Length: 200
Image (spheres, rainbow, N blue to C red):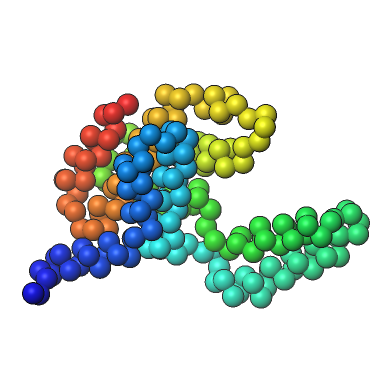
């Protein structure tokens, strides 16, 4: 049986987004997870969505690895005695520096919001100050939740109602990105987005 052209396109597109869709659907199949875990999954899904569809590199990977990264490596080795760098610390620096050519979460969020802001009728993404504050807060909270230690008190990082509001906005953005990519009309997307944002 020959598939309808639209269905075939949807299937092909959804297959491409498989990692993102798995992360997103996991929020519904495992609904009793902590809100912090759900937030981190959404941030990861959004980052993956942008990486899969748009790549997101400041410069070509080989250009980076053969150029400035080599300068970083030389600096690490030449300064290792001056700063008493252990081999473990040097390896950690090399690993972290090896991906600096890729866009940060901040840059990816900014691009995705720019591409999808017409789907949002509220001021959350259409006003620059609110948009910039949203991006900065998401990145800050994601970083803090990713690097917890024994002295971390989750409530001191962010209050639950504010985290829930951020979570809803992040989910609205991801849902918008996925639906737009799959060819859903903007009017339908707007209605779905409003339903998510009304949960606050």
